[in-house]
Length: 478
Image (tube, rainbow, N blue to C red; front, side, top):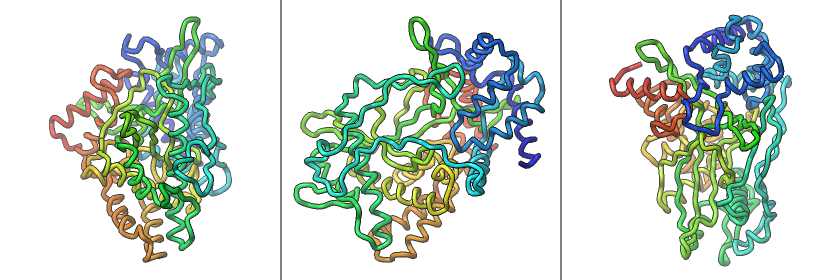
């Protein structure tokens, strides 16, 4: 472990705990069913008679997503070296759970290096809902032949001491809706696996028959489904709730907003830095029955954590705490939505194959990119570069290398034109590791905040919006 690495963490903690405001402080009375993370930790320390924050911070760090696991041994050493006031109850002690885009990428690279050296392994993770569709399936039988999927329901102890992690089904989403959404997500994932088979000159492993015709590609099947459904799509963004923390009280459940914060590097004249809560982005497709006008099922697509890779998921059927909010943007009508669905399927094949081929930790999450990056490529392609995600940390050579390999492997591949188009689109997609148009970066930072003005739960988000908005208004070059 390099001394410089520990020194960087010590400097980071010392700087962030003296910000002047705690990143996690809440706007008073805006969300009555919440308690701030600092207040929750102070209460827990009092209950357990703990007078030093070190064991609390270390315990919380252990529950971080896998790609940040490399941070834990650095943090353990750094906590012995930081200014003592940073570990007092009145300091911005949780501010160390923040990172710049470059820092997040560095942690992911460090963890990947340890993984490839054999010093860490992928954390086991239950796979997303799979309905175990047969290799050959008829559309008319698809929902009855597949295994039923039950939404997760209830609470379990959080890996963060003193808190629960809860998921409750949304009563407005029926079991039939959840089941159909899971089946269709599974179907398109299986169809996505056929792309690599075609490139390797092999027969497809999965097909769907629709009114006597067999389909092995997402685009052509989705086009046929348009005879039954109006298919539209949009981007959905909400806070990336890596730690869904809550506490049960006598009368209700109190939520503890605790996202990771992104340090943007954008500062006002006083030197105060804009820090925004990390956002989760996903692309959603809704299938609306042409006769009834009702949304029968929906699927979403993004790059997930802990070996899930980039794939389709059933649309979320769980309730979310009010403070998370959801912002919808980048809406497409039917024809373009079907075309984008095909591109997303092709990207799944490219991203997952590249992650497996290069033996990347966590199937490439944080290296090949995060949820924002996958969605950004689609937005770059279909919205003339109007990309709404931040931060974007895709290390493009992995994907470009896989595309190049496929182009060279099979000139008769029917997707050759799409591979060439993606080669160009990926390189044109904004990237916060290599820099670029700083005004576009400011615009994307604002676009990634899923709250309207007056809805921000965190005082620091109100401040960040003001800092970034002012820089944009002044036409400032950072």
